[in-house]
Image (tube, helix red, strand yellow):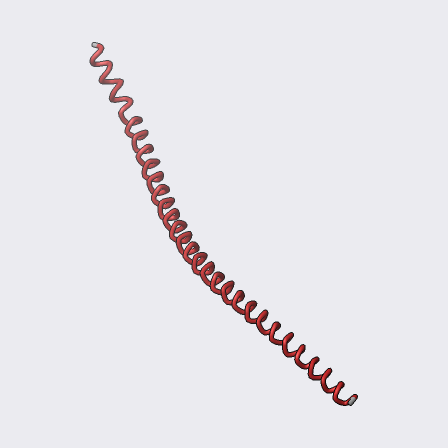
Length: 104
């Protein structure tokens, strides 16, 4: 008799269990959709980071080139300042000689 009782109880719970299983399946499907969406978003963010890293590297390269140009220009400026100082000294000497000649 217990077998018949179990079957009756099993039959009574079967609709509610199948409903619970359907609910769980629906939740699993929703979670899988969410997971898929998160994976896509992660992929987008990852590729965005790669693009940003590439831009950063490119800009760092450009900055390095500009620093080199700046160093060359500073070196040229020092050379020109030195030449200007030499020319100024020569002009002062010439002025001095002119003044000595005019005194004679």
